[in-house]
Image 1: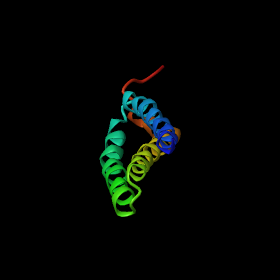
Image 2: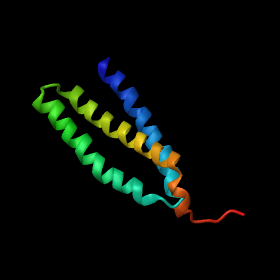
Image 3: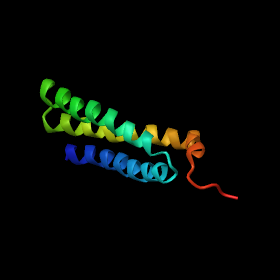
Image 4: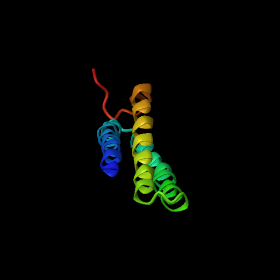
Length: 96
C-alpha cells in the first residue's frame, strides 16, 4: 500500500511534466525541458534512489521517493517557467 501512495504523487508529477513540458516545447522553449531533464533526472531519481534506497536502507520505498522527487521538482520548475511567461520571447509564431 505505501508504494501505491507514493506512486500517486509520482504520477501527478509525471502528468504535470508531460502537459507543461509539451506546452513549453510547442511554444519554442524546448531547451529548458531538456536542461531540467539532464540535471534533475540523475540527481534526484538516481542519486536520491541510491541514497534513500540503499544507504538509508529504505529499499523500494526510497527508490520510489527518489523518483517521485524528480518528477515533482521538475513539474514545479516547469510550472514556474510557464507562469513566468519567458517562453513568449521564444515563440515560433507571431499572433496578430
